[in-house]
Image (cartoon, rainbow, N blue to C red; front, side, top):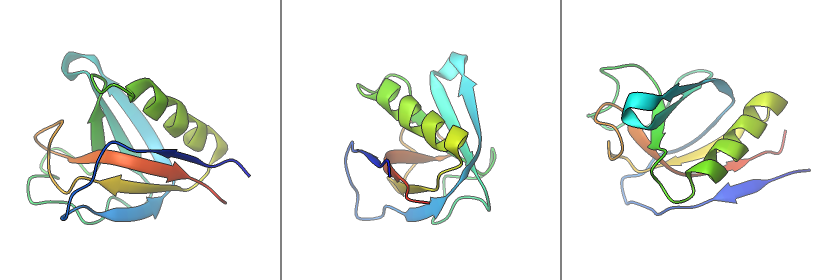
Length: 106
């Protein structure tokens, strides 16, 4: 069993949900990565959703490459991911911001 946990911070209004990744979008102009999940995101803040149903994070974060490695592993292996979000639109004005995640089991 392979498990990964990456952490950046926490928030009292954060959401937690488990899903498999359906696609990942890299957006160069905003240095953002959008993560689309099967069944849609859960616990989205009011600021999220007008531009689509996804969570995002900035590639300017210190551990962004580690995020990408773990997320692409989970996507390629079809593993479920437990997403922990900030409960606010920090890195992108239209989506909940990924704070940390864990991969597996399953």
